[in-house]
Image 1: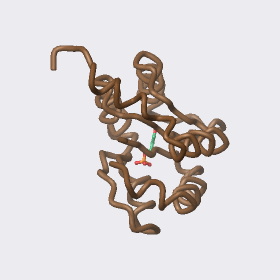
Image 2: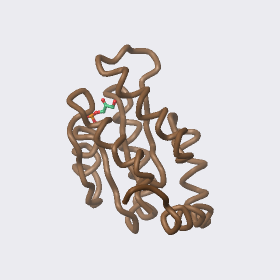
Image 3: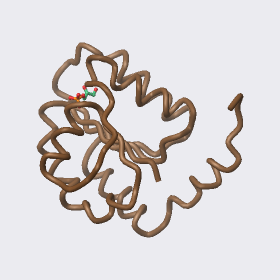
Length: 138
Ligand SMILES: O=C(CO)COP(=O)(O)O
């Protein structure tokens, strides 16, 4: 599966701890992230992550481009609900595209945990069908 990690600054520690807890599960997948989130995770785990730009500089939009093509299977996006972000429009656009494509996205760690357990059980197998029958110009 193709999995993306994104966390706002005050959620980064929570994200790192979450990924450490499920490192063995994430190891077998293709991982992506925004710039700083990925750097923090890679500093504290053995995981290899393809890092896009930092969120405020366009990283959310780069991940959004993958979502638009239905290329991501799971997104864990720990947003900070208590602080305004300068790139709020990019964040809304990314979440909107997840709904357009029906891509599972967790915006808090409780939901992230449920989705990762589903991933462990094999409940994401339907995503392989999505990739197989993906429609569009490509
Ligand atoms: O701002 C972000 C998501 O909206 C996260 O970006 P960074 O991982 O680069 O901090």
